Image (cartoon, rainbow, N blue to C red; front, top):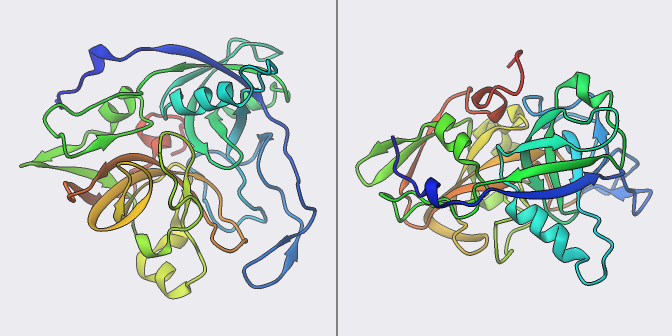
Length: 295
């Protein structure tokens, strides 16, 4: 059992509402110069949940399940309320529908999407059918400040303690072995690189070099997959650093615009490479925290 500071963590209510899909530009231009009109961020996605493929859809940046944001209209709070909603919500947190026909239904936070600043929540398909845009979602935010007491060189972000327990990293000397589905080279990480913090948002795996995609088997990526990014340090933002390693969860689908692709929200990082990734197809949060009976 890994020693953590879990007894020192605060569990806090944060609230958002189901956000409408938005289209800023009718046509998006792909990295090959093709103009396309496709579904994107926001809304209730009825036929896409964690555990499904992250690739191959006629879509761009689509978020699985339910997209939630805090639309606090107090001018003194404004974006600060949504920032708190995003920063404090952690993958694995319980989310409860607080209004509408599905009031009382329980879901789970599965990721965060930067730029649009959404928190993503999974609900069973039967609940999705009852939800409406604007329904309130209360998240029991828990996990900010989580630490591994015996592994100070490994930093944790965006993770409910229950997810860490289900993931069961295995000690190996001064390192931890963690299960992941894929290895990703830092060279193909795009949008989100250079952000000065990883407590919200994500950054994207670019899918424009077919040789790299085949070499690392990335066409089989699924939403909810835990992936290890080599030569990537997320200790104080997202930077390239040889020997560092970061691990995160795939949160949205593939994209067509230059610099974009399936997004990854950070969960673990080590500047000195103290994380040992172990490949297994079962390293998906839909399986680990039992979000779906068919996964």
